[in-house]
Length: 133
Image: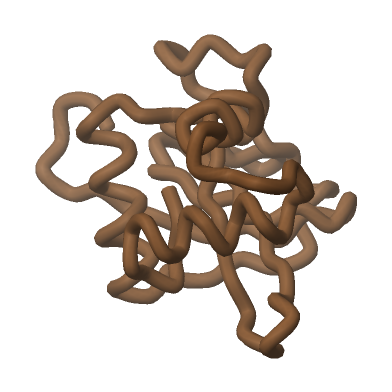
């Protein structure tokens, strides 16, 4: 946020099924403007654990500028957990908005198979966390 000491972070569940977290900088009657939007990819492992990846929301967005989410697209809005905020802040402050391809490339040498579950399992082992960023 610009020129303020208070940063409000929200998680938005969108009508297209995406879940996005970001720093709210402006709200109007028709839209909410956020900075540093990241999306969640949630999936179940073979062992039945729920895993969450945090990725750049859209690789075509220029992250220097805020993004508007129109309220007609928002299904739900909530406060992020402390663990989500810790990981979100690490990503934003480190400037590590990774795309799907960059995540695959960052652990590619560690993989024997190239399917998504093996990639996520490798990331979990590498970072020893339920949340990958």
